[in-house]
Length: 142
Image 1: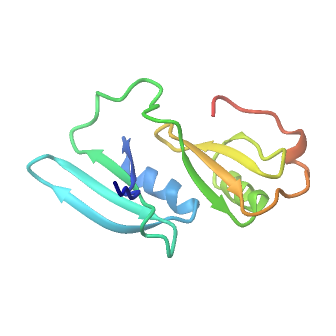
Image 2: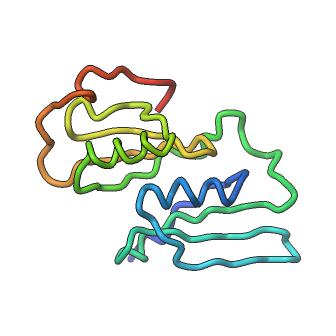
């Protein structure tokens, strides 16, 4: 039996705000599908050159009362980054809370505007512990 990864789907409450968050992570819109009859929009976003690894943002035009209060539909999205510290600094500078800072130089967690956990992993070996990350505590859940 063959199996192939297609995408991870998350429901979003504010499509523009959510797309901006994923753009801050470096993702780009790869395709969009609007369904008037079903009253929803699907936007697929992926890292450049990795269109086979998209996240599907599902936006229901009439709202989405079916979302659990904590928005947890699955564990998390995971992306490898070239520089965990630079990525986290960029996100913080743009108003994103670093829920689990990269104290170990290897891993951090942030949350999307829709409360989806996003894991960031350092490419290759972990970076040496550095401030302000090494002494920064967790914020909220991740």
